[in-house]
Length: 378
Image (cartoon, rainbow, N blue to C red):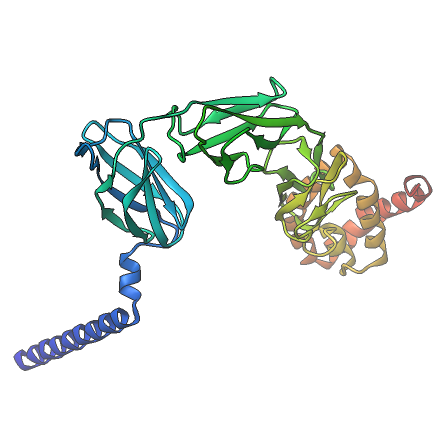
């Protein structure tokens, strides 16, 4: 017994050494391939963080509280912050890797850095001196009352060259057109959220709006009780060309088939969750469902012994053309699909019960449906 235990311990120790050696080799391979350094830098898409002090050369010392510090990644705006009482800044810089430059109150800092997603870097910033002149920005909308225009940076007055974050929001019934200003420049004058570079003068920045044309989206399911059709975006009415997220969910006993609409376009008409592009008109989008598990006529199938019996085709036609076209009929069909499967299973196990149900229940129902076909088929 002692020898056996010692042998097991020895094998465990050897296995442990092998596992440790394998782990070391794997780590070395990952390091050689650059995998571990990449993971250490953080996942792509995470912001780079920079922090430190901000000071001037003349006069020597920290900048005043509230001084605007901005970062640019390869010339594109990346983020901003205002200094605290000690002249410290803390910046989260969005964007892919690249060269980061900084401005302090619109003045280019002497330091640059490399943007690495997920990295945190301590970096003290210096500028020759603070600008002596600052300019006011006034936000306006045209026509009056059609929306709002906001200075998101909210630190006016600004020095020449400062990138100011601005945002336009249209009022109900209106759409944003563009930005306009007599001086300065926009990074994108057609975007509701953008940046504006301050000129060497006071300036009014105007968000222009116009009355929009909107169309109503109505969601429907066919048959009525077969499932639900939902406008997930939930912002109707929409402008022509807008993309709307839609979703179909089938009820018990049904399965989703496809989307249909009289106008507009689907990203994928056969997907239960998809997108729909609005047309230039009011539109109804319908989620179409069908019965699962064959004909769905469970008791009739059990009575006739086959789902392909001619009499079952008549009942199926009546179901689709009459019952499923009304709320009450759809509710009846849904209840039938819920309760009839165990009854059909019970009937199918007895030839006597199959004959009994066929003669006294199903045949009379088929006769009645066929007799009135001239009415309901119209």
